[in-house]
Picture 1 (tube, one colour):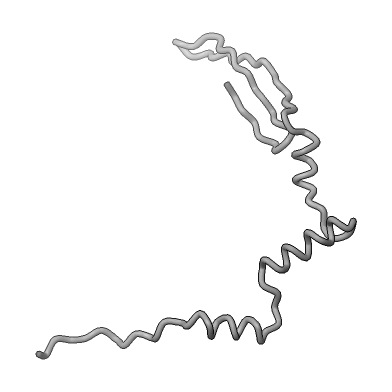
Picture 2 (cartoon, rainbow, N blue to C red; picture 1 turned 135 degrees about the horizontal axis):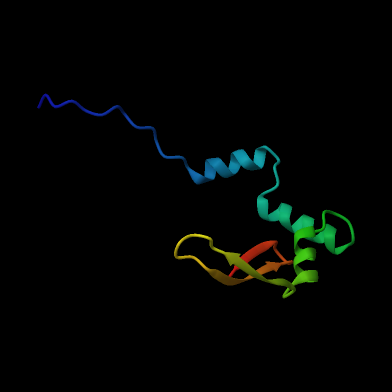
Length: 95
């Protein structure tokens, strides 16, 4: 009919071919690697999760400060706020 066509597209990848390529490369699947690290940590070795330890040690511990903002603009004044610092995840909240 004389209409221009798009360039030919490649065939979609076959999941089985991708699996065989991964198996031949002798790379552990991600879930096996995570399981291996879990077993190592459980036995006392490996890489312990320091972020989790910090969270568990400081869960529900908050440093709270009462703060005052002196707004010196024409319509300003004193504004009182509460500043909370959460020790578990280093977040700051201003109320």
